[in-house]
Image (cartoon, rainbow, N blue to C red; front, side):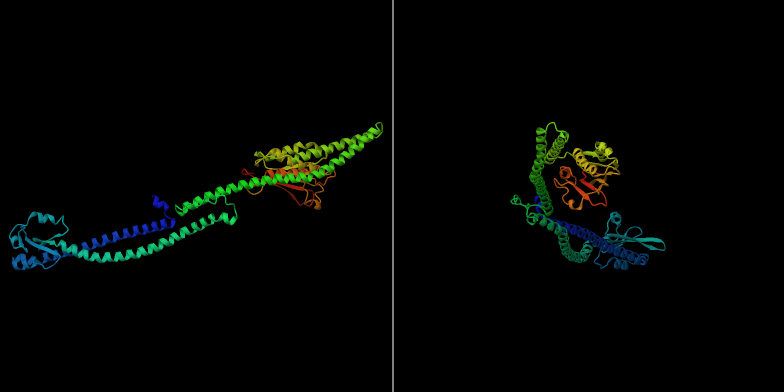
Length: 471
């Protein structure tokens, strides 16, 4: 068993094909040999039976005439296939036989009974006018018969041997071609897998681990596949960790770039606050002190919004996906901003099937949708504003959530940088809303897209589906 396991698949397939060919050839040879032997034996027996019947026909007249000389000549055959011939009369008395001692004796009963049980004993009645005058008993020369049959079988055996040699050569060639056709793709795939790391330029920390040389090609291919699967899993883990580090570094770099803008905005707000406070300190009873108090309140609120946006963008997001019904999520988002929509008489519509589900973090996605809805509300006019939310499956592995409006849209010159921090189309705003949306989509392995439309703005959140979608 150990030797068979260590054999190559090519050797195994060749051995299997050769054994199959040998089994087929052996079965055919045994069948042919037995058929030829039976045919030859039957031919000899048929010939001896015909000879016995001929002797019985020739012995009718000598028996009637009691001509012992003719009967003796009939019994004294010079046929190598015949061992002895005995002719009896109606009383079962031997009247002719090569053995003179048997003449006049009653034929032993065992000889007559043997005719029904032995293949080399034959008998035929001597008939005349419908009456049985006697019988002819013939015994074949079994040794000569076997010798004759064996001589003819030797020629058949020689032909079978030649046919066997030709069959063996053809079987060997066929086995080699079959094994080559079966093992060539396996060996090619095995070489491709074993050389994959070199071609892809992967690290060599498992250089000392080699494909086992024992076992057939299929075992080695299975081992190489398992090893490659393990290496691929490790590289995917490293790639995921590298991606997370890259996101963290990108976030830190973005925060660094934001620092200057934040400092500039804080300085402007503090300048306004300082100016308004000095004026109130110097002219505390002035008639326009309400305006300066309003300036202080607006600047403090702007500082608060900017600081909150900075904190929202800077804090790490960790998505906790759960099975979420998308329509209920969209309905909660609209209800959350129902007052703002009614203030500007904006007509909000929703298009989403009830059965649409996906694995996502509902709080984060709701935050991203709220940012998009607030941007749309700020951009829409006081009259005839329309806001449309929709969700649908895209293929088998993606969920698309659309937020569109009929507002003024995004200027072409700002479309390229609209998702960067502190890029905004509003006169007042932190410019972090779309940046937060982008970050939330990153932790979901998704993306946000700004589509070109004839009027208004249309944003699409592309999310990977981790549950089968049905609609």
